[in-house]
Image (cartoon, rainbow, N blue to C red; front, side, top):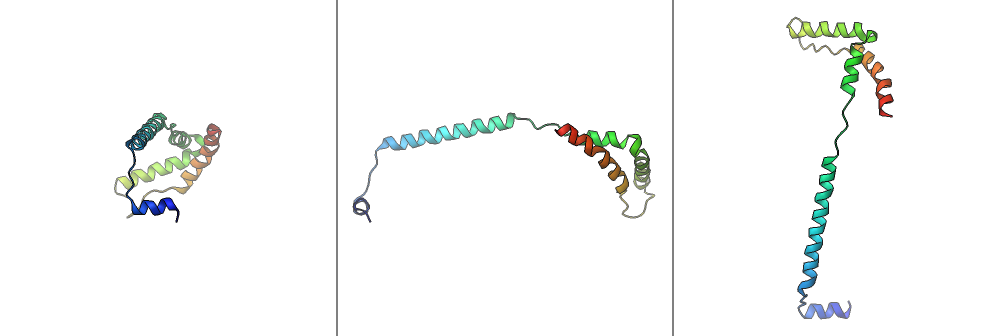
Length: 111
């Protein structure tokens, strides 16, 4: 234990008002900087998601037309109540076709 710590433990320590004001100013400057940084982050806009548009384009292409037609027929049947119980028309072949078509286009646009 140092002599300063020993004396501080025996006698109360009083600090001048000036350091407190500096601390308050520092806190105000920090909060202002944080506010400015948050405003800058909000101004930055998210880029538009091109995946849904590419999926629609590929679903309507000649390459995936047969799978898309089958999927739409299934959807109509299920929505009309004529499908099997708990049928949801998840067509893996259609999605496989669409995703295979979308992948090269998507990665080409992301470069």
